[in-house]
Image (cartoon, rainbow, N blue to C red; front, side):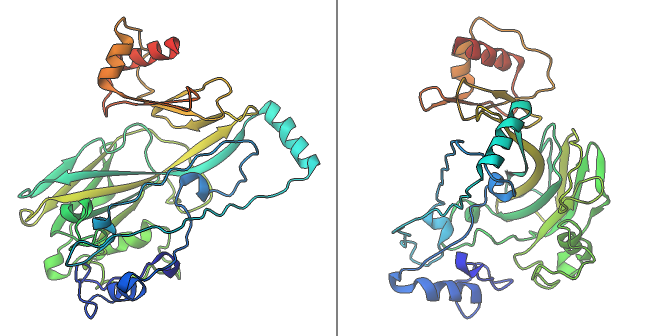
Length: 370
């Protein structure tokens, strides 16, 4: 982890700029002070890279990395420091496959596409305004239900980038009620009711173990009971039928809705961000023509001839068939974002959170038009 500049911040002092209080900051400062050059090395946390199967040959893959703001990645009193990238290298392992195996792959692809099971990660953030004491978040994820959810809260200023605040300081903000509802049923059966003021939060702390697959195992996460409220307040839930979100086997996809109910013992002194991390079990398929398909229950898939890429139309697949409309293309330009890449080789259309039947009709018109 230190290869990636990770040094544990001292609980309760995540925002401290004093190295005597925050030992993690002191270690990071020792490697970067006085504009000293330093090296980092680590994996790219991309869904497809976290599975064990080799990628077929002749499949085009593009990777786009977007840096966070310096105000988010750095902490200082002056607020003028910057990060300058001097060099970046991507290391990729390639394997030489014997001709007989490649022939077997080609024959198998004639009958069925190559299948890559992936744990897809989706993160949603919701701003909770200052002064509120309760907040209900409806329809966090529509259609496919995640296998695991992790919930945390950070200061809105730190989330947006502030040199004086740590963006990974997950505080409790005096939350005293948290209920996760899956299709109207609470998970767990009783809501979490921590009392951080009196040091009573055992059930919430225990979710770090039972929600991450290390419950009753001889494993840890380096977060003690006393460390939990000092910047490590996360609520973890395993939503799989047999509590197997950390196991290699898969479960049947389940459709439904998620609702999160929150209450705080005192009005919020500042706006905060609720961050919801979710894991889904999905399937990526690549056929003999090297076209890609993603198995997502809340998506339409669009294939272009000889695309070697895939496009995804985010929409609700359980709606009835749409009927094309006359104003199709113009309505599309008004209500959705269209991104045509690489001379029509890939089409990506993103819809609003609650697409209408007219939006679906517009998409069908656009596909016919193209």
